[in-house]
Length: 101
Image (cartoon, rainbow, N blue to C red; front, top):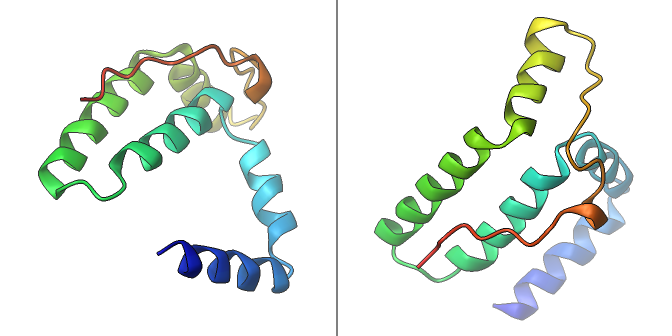
């Protein structure tokens, strides 16, 4: 499995699309990115029922975080696409406990 991941990463980087992906990721909530990465790592090789349970816990966390409303404001209400994330960088995101079992 690890060999497949490495090959996929090498292919992706060779297509020149990595700068677009990094630019798009930099526009997203740093907290949501950390939650997503933690969730992906947690869900690997789990049965689908456990994946759904973990996804539900992550959704509950995200919807209660200030970045959720800020994203809605920036994209849908004011339509300025200029969210003010809390915190404003991945490096400033504190440890997140999603209570994933």
